[in-house]
Image (cartoon, rainbow, N blue to C red; front, top):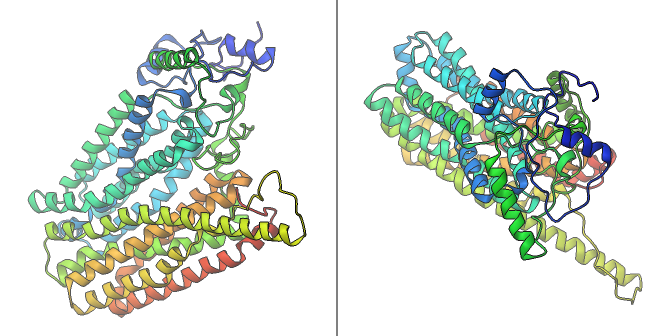
Length: 575
């Protein structure tokens, strides 16, 4: 028997022998691998703890798990993705009360909002590195939820604004885990043709959080006090911790064991095959906590921080060796900044979010001071923004796919016309295949949001709030800001994914973009109070409208010049 290193504790003999024997024969479905005894087992007490926590690697391909199990996991992940939007808004109606109770200034209270959004962008980079270094998803979820719950409970007892700021940062980091690794969990379990609906369901959690947070926050602040919102957050985090613990098995998928992810589920060739597939799924349901199948193939790790939902859509490629040090993985993430089209998209796509969050952080003090609203009514006023977020998430996604299809069809017709012009009379074996250009994701709808909808929202809100004209106009203006912000998220994310997938850097690009937008939102929201006091809300609205137009101009430049930028840096077309 060969000598096994201490790091090879998860490698069973069966897979070791299979790796040495050569490739396995191809079958319609990947069979469930039976549990085997590891070559080097952990101490009995630790082994029992690992089993109880459900941290064993899967013994069957997560892509072939029963649909009921996948739906259960997606439900929990969607609930986890509620936390960032919920916790950043449930606290908003109580901001004036926090200022009065802690005897502090608007600037320092605003810092509890600004740093929350900043650390919500910092956390995903570290969590993604930890997940791929350990080759586990579940421990990261559990650690993050435990951190979130503990920090939320500690916020309830904070007696100074400095302590509250520090605890809000920890709370934000704990809430960000779903942002960083939920896409990896989805890519573990769903074939390429199934991922759209799964990603949509998980992403809807953030909009639900932003919609329900301020309403519940307003009710609780009015009835009990602002500290009660942190008890609610702690309870929600504890419930999600136990949901993850009991309902979500470890899903990390090794392409080197089960092969690259296929575009769609395999079709049984006979009733017998279908029956065996169901039995295989049932067997995997019974062996969640069994020792993981891993052999020499487990030495491979993904070529990026994770196989994100869109990284493998085009290729479904095999895993490649990469650094096992989390710090090296973090350093690799930032290498996308050497690509000029990534920098342009990150900067131009960050301003709509920063503008929306800046105005959002000012709403509690404006609505109380200018319109005399209570915390309860202020909370309900945020419904317009949450509703517009939901509408824009669906409208922007559909318009993006529509304009992408239109552009592809136009290029296909142009290619066919060019072939006919060359005098080719024979019928080709297959029609010309049009290119899939990432710049097609920058749609007229998205440009209209940047050039018109966001500026209109900023002007309506700024002028009305600055002059005390109408609360209804403020609510409408903020709704337009939220609509335009969500469209920019869809536009920037899809562009990053399509442009960077051929380089295997889609996950890195989206992570860096998220950090950039949250950093900008932190800076602008922190400076918003001094700016408002210096120039007034009306001029602040004018400034926000001008910045939105400049940002949209950057996206227009990317649409017109992006293909040349990518070609100059070695990528002629997107994935």
